[in-house]
Image (cartoon, rainbow, N blue to C red; front, side, top):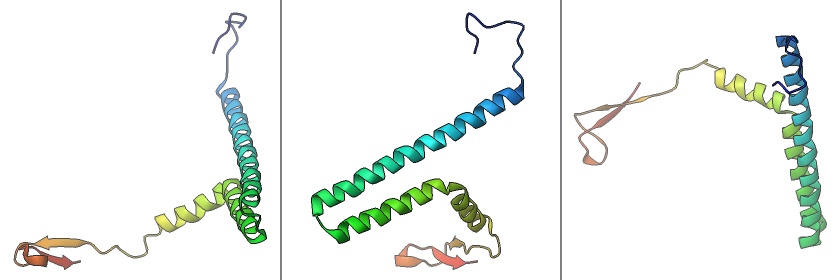
Length: 113
């Protein structure tokens, strides 16, 4: 983006843009974690205010801690989920209709392969 005071002879390199993007990504992640922490504190306080129960407040605290852990460890969760999705050790069972017989008298048979 150019401003009125920008030097037209100044060249912005791709490395500069990537550094800026990485910096902004880190700042956004920090902002999201800060907002989530604030919301977790408010949720725990509201649980105490509404229930006046130690158990209810403890449950709210544990759930808030789990959510904050999940937000701060998205890379770990993404890796674990991705490895389960990419696992192609066995083929999934598929169902193919056949026109001879079928469930509920539909005239279609289901065979498994």
